[in-house]
Length: 238
Image (cartoon, rainbow, N blue to C red; front, side, top):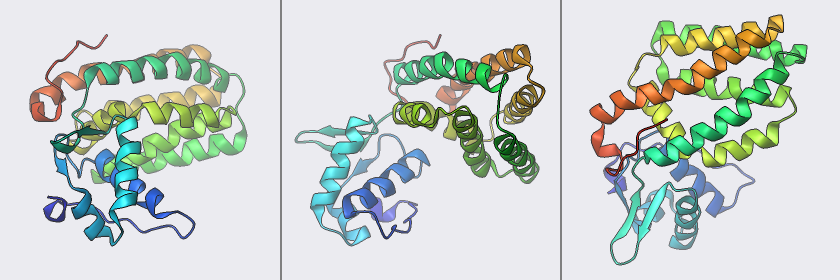
């Protein structure tokens, strides 16, 4: 049960409701793989752990099930969803379609203050690789891509992508946590920022194509090493 799991009890924000806090707590721990795919969850255990009633826990369960992160099975219980390759493929298709267009915009015109943010982010990524802090590297990775969307005035599109990216991002987190072939990711990030800085559309397009397709190859190793985390009716990623 959850009390014996290595979960992170995150601090509650003053402005958020109990349901919002429970939702954020659960999603954080699912995405960080502290609540591992396939594990059972109990409304009672979570309510006791967080000191809340069961109603906001139940509401958070429903919201997370709508994001494909929880499976609520009548008469059986609630489980953290297994990673679904078809879901990952769909998210990859969405990101490829949209992010290539955003990178093309960024390589034509990009605000200088956001470029400075990207360059600062890359310096921190380099430090993370040196210190082998792969989970922080993942956070910086996410922040970098968000900054590119924000710099191109596409922040709402980034938020929309994130809502659909839950299974895709769990694969990326699993990849980062295990330190799987992380150095090429840093190199691709450096090339993306260089392409934006130098307004090199060709370099930007080549790099983002390699970058977004990396998950297709990583997932083969991850599926082998963490087979219990994945849904067993698998499709091959394209």
